[in-house]
Image (tube, rainbow, N blue to C red; front, side, top):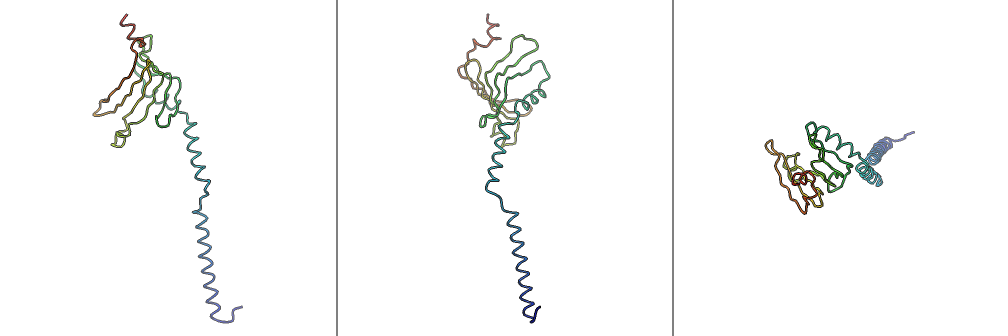
Length: 168
């Protein structure tokens, strides 16, 4: 029971202050993030990338691109971190030729970041291991045409079966 008018003011101020403290505590609970939560998110992203079915993704992308007389086949596809997507056992076949037109032990594809920043998402860089050597390919789509450059190092043309059959 309140006996003085001043007691009512003190009680009102106490209730208001208590409500503000309660609101601050609730806001702190909402904003509080467990330190472990950041690690959980990082773990999720790593496991998502590591277990993602890149093989299926690449096969579907190639199925959408293929429709002509040439088809691309590969044994395996995986994420190769800084190298992009790595394909192994790659071969290019033609319906007209019994032997593969091109065979590569591995192909690593990634976007060309310089072109990507300039707004061209159709630019790729490929590192190809074929016929005992390597080839670096940088290509982009410009004005409806494919433009680019190829650097070839130590490729043994004698191991290229279609060329060897033509030279015999």
